[in-house]
Structures are given as C-alpha cells and as structure tokens.
Image (cartoon, rainbow, N blue to C red; front, side, top):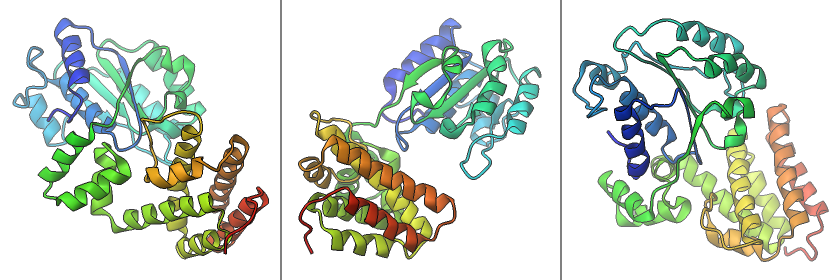
Length: 329
C-alpha cells in the first residue's frame, strides 16, 4: 500500500524504476513517526516487483512474498546494543550477503532502518559495499537527520526528505482508525500531521502521560517555578524509563522554544506549541543551551545507572543555577 501523503516521492521513484534509474543507495530522512520505514518498505516492493510498469503491483509472486514477510531478497539489518545501532558483525554479514545473486528476480534490497546511532566503525565497514555495490543490490537507510551518517556514505546516496502530512490528511487517517473527533483533535494538537506519533499517542496511555509531563514541565520552566519543576520531575522519576521518555520529549519542546525565539516556526517537533511559545518569550540563547545541556547530562546519568530520583533532583538543581530570577512557589 502506497504511503499516505507521499505521492510525489512515490511518483518519482516509480519513474526511476520504469526508466531503469533506481538508486543503488537511498537515504530517507525525517522526524520519527513521519512514515520513513513504511516508505522504505514500499520502495523495497517497488525494486523487487516483477512488473516494472506497474510496480509495486501487489499481485506478482515477489509482492506476495513481501506481504507475507518471506521474501528472500529483502534483508532487514537487526539492531543491537544499548543504543540500538548495528554491530560490526551484522554489517560484515550483510557485506557477504550483498555479493550473492538474488534468489528470486533480479535485485536484492538491504534495509537499515533507524540508522541514526550507527557507529562510525559500522559505517566505515559498510562504505565499500555502498561505494562499489554489485549491480543487483540496493541499500536503503532511514534516519531522523542527514548528519547521522558519514559524508563519505552520503556522497554515494540519493537523499530524500520525508515530511509529516497535512493535519487534514492526518485527521482523515485517524478517523479511518475509528478515533473520535475529540481524540483526533487531541493527537493533532500534540503532533500535528505526524501520523505515527498521533496513532502512538492515542494507543499508548504511557505516551499520553509522558506528553502531559513534558507540557507541564515546559510551562513550569516558562513560569520559572522551582517548586513545580521539582514536583513534576519527582513524579516522573518514580519510574526510570518514564523519566527518560519525559526528558526526551522535553528536549523537543526546548528545540521548538529556541526556534521560536528566532523566527516563526512551521515545523515544530514538540508536543505543545502554547507552552513552547511561553517559554520562548522568556528564554535566551544562553539559557537555551544551558537547559538543553542539563537535560542531556541527566539522560547520560540515567544511561550510567544513576538513580532516577537522584537524576531528577540534580537536574532541577542545575536548572536553578541557570539564574531564573524570582522563583514562584
């Protein structure tokens, strides 16, 4: 099924297939939840389909095997390690696989999804395969940012940005999933046209709680309210993974506030535009960096097995040292 809202990209890819100009390496980049992996799987179907003029046709043997997750010529690299990267062993195995002729049809596709944390060693190990690929191979990568990959890899790729859809189209998709108008409005109010994030928000109570914490923390920062900051961080810290998720969501709010201090922003990535705007009215570039770095330090502390409560307390203390001025209690 063609990804919703990506008609232009899909048309371009279809033209490439029909004219025999498919890229041997493709990078799809954009914010999480915008449909990159869905588009990558659709592109794999396009490459592997037996009928170039109508690819992906959905009816040929290749398309049917893809639908059944049993196609021998689609290799999806497995993540490993704490940061979810790709091990050197995984990359070496894929390099060995890449030289093997297709089992069915004329092409093989190797997909590296969510490659943002791919180590430099793994990227360098893969470089030769991407630089001098066998004629029957196609490599597909998805990342949130282009800068996640080495320039030497990027120079060998066709790079395509993937954007969230319009809020109207997102609302239509959510309605097709039988969500009420009220639910659709809540989700779109948090995540705009990011269908993946909207669906996750409506389906996951823990994400709803995370978003609520991030909204309240942004407001507390905007109000310079020390007591509320400590209360919220302490509540989130009752569960280590909850605190981690809240801080990661809060980083997107800080990014939005920073962008708003410079100019009108049309591509927000945070979950609450109103509180980000209130924070933008107070925050300075220096404070933005300090608040952001304090959150990053807290995330590193959590990765280093520092207790959640201690991490929350230390974070609040760092924020207070920034110099909020008169605290509101």
